[in-house]
Image (cartoon, rainbow, N blue to C red; front, side, top):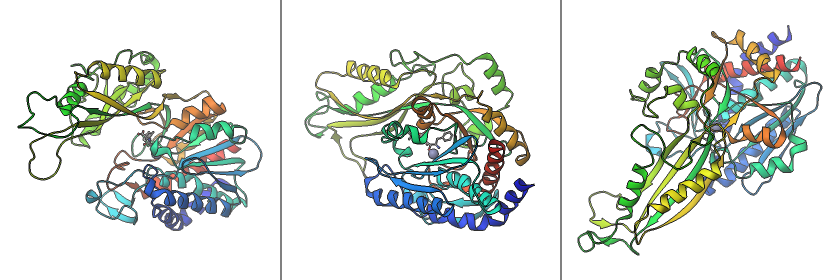
Length: 457
Ligand code: BES
Ligand code: ZN
């Protein structure tokens, strides 16, 4: 059977596939930091070359931000698009890494071999699982499976500012029957997952200003308002005692979990003590009347991602700072409208400002939650195709993170997305010492070969 030949080819070629991934991981494609612009470009070039080596008609496409990579391969049957992102998160705090984040290596760990480096899991390693499956397919069949479009983005980790205009301008070229996205995780080490819903994300940055300059806290403390105190009080009021978010209208569009989905999730037997225990926690801290899986997958949140102001250096300084800053994000579900929430949040903050204080805003990304169309026949085909590869059958799960493109594929291209990924909960994505298990990479490649076989028959 030719699928077996493709799988054997994947097994034989794993060392070379790993070397290729290591090359890509050496490119410092941090999208959010303008200092790495040339590196983002270099990652795009690398991918264009790699796709061309597979016979794909690929090119780098300029945007006002980092380039997109688009490649086409003509063929019969279902038109499949594959999406991944080549950009990575910043590496700070660098001192917590055990190795140079851009000098990736295979490491032996008590849980097996891992590829360690920034982007190993999110998303270069995952992106390459699909490309490597295609490479093995080509080695066996002499051509790629069916009608394929490759679409790689370089701005996913910084809110995808160029994505919507690019999709609109190139809709006819990119529209497909199904978009395959490899940017999510396994449900458990033995259980592959197809993510059926993802949360949206809204980002806000604010600066509260009080006095016109930093002041001596002995000379001015008392009569002068302190913006750090004002900001802390506002932030402390964003949740009530039960964990509910207090922004007016925030819960508009938040649906109750349908009973059928609740029982399906109950059947997953998610071990929330192990989940929290893995990061040194024991008690779910979200809305108190919800289960941990609900908190993660089907409930919205408000998080303070950063807060700063005043003296941060060694020692002590009796200062009364002129400004206080925070970065705040909201994960969104259902039909919550990010723009409406931005408006209501800003008004809520402005209404609480005491005399002499003002606020300045910087808007970050705003994307709604997305719901996949699991009635698309590709879902069932993929679920069955994954079975022989993994000890346990594939689970339909929710996803707490955000991949704005999944929703835009539907709303702009009318293309359904199917999210299958092989990251593990302990991959430390966005954190120091990010890694991708060699077993995730290997089985991920094999999984795509099986899914491609099932979808292109
Ligand atoms: N790959 C993640 C999202 C993810 C991880 C979804 C695990 C489901 C399970 C993605 O690269 C990511 O981190 N996205 C950002 C969004 C962005 C707009 C910065 C996120 O979710 O914070
Ligand atoms: Zn990602």
